[in-house]
Length: 167
View 1 (tube, rainbow, N blue to C red):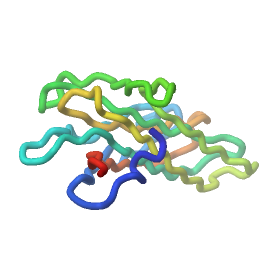
View 2 (tube, helix red, strand yellow):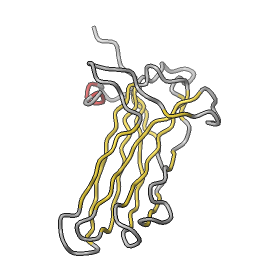
View 3 (cartoon, helix red, strand yellow):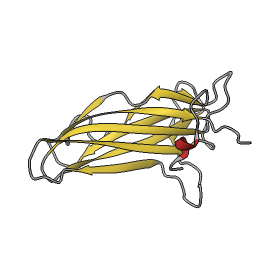
View 4 (cartoon, rainbow, N blue to C red):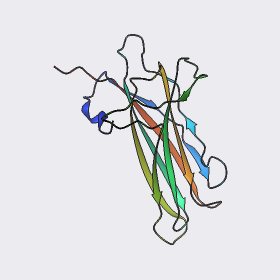
């Protein structure tokens, strides 16, 4: 599914939504390695065609100890209820012989030996929603790989995508 969003043209077939709200994490403490979820999104809104893909971008900034890093995570959940009470992790269908995965990760490492170096990173997760239920939400988290001293701030955004028929 990599590259799926680039095959779309701007217009009514793309909807931007907030993802996970801005959150803070402290290594081995509050917010570390804990998912924050965005709002429940209707992928089949009345008056519009169905959305069959989502692009989720996680953005994180961290102050890291020398030689340590952070891992960013993205996942999609789906459910049949608009209040999100039945959300469960979504595993996308197999595409091009590749089984979809529930989570996508990216590790950002601080290659320096200095403490407190600012590092940033982004993670893009493109997911085929063709087998998802009507409602979806995105989740983001960071896992700081040192204990106690490293901190991060992260958030995410999502784009619901509807594939246009080609002539």
